[in-house]
Length: 169
Image (tube, rainbow, N blue to C red; front, side, top):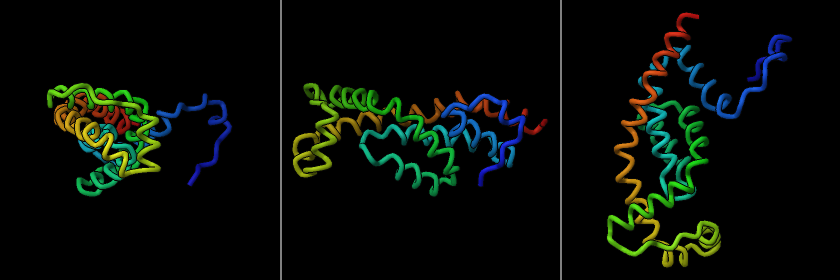
């Protein structure tokens, strides 16, 4: 439900995408009693799942994790959307890490070809790029267990400060 704008609101500068989709929902949750720890966990898990290197899976992964761990769906999906900017470069990094771990020559990575082949000929896609996908998943599996606690620790203090400010208003 949209709240009508007041004359004072009309004078405010338009909020940026990340403010509307991430900062505002987090602020609302903090004022409604959700703990900074729960929000930090949501952001940490959501960002890790948002970077899972198989195209088309991240939204579902975030929904399932949100349900299983009681995470905030609007925040986890906002984080998922924001991570889109880092998604493709990190797929390449995950593939290269998987290549190095399996001691194989660098995998072929042509994302537009991969998307087209997956969409139109999934069988051919898996024959041609199956090992590349497995290398990407392997790289992600190595990084994610470090990523989640790192993001949690980094984001927790600012969230605690924001919660104190929200409570004092």
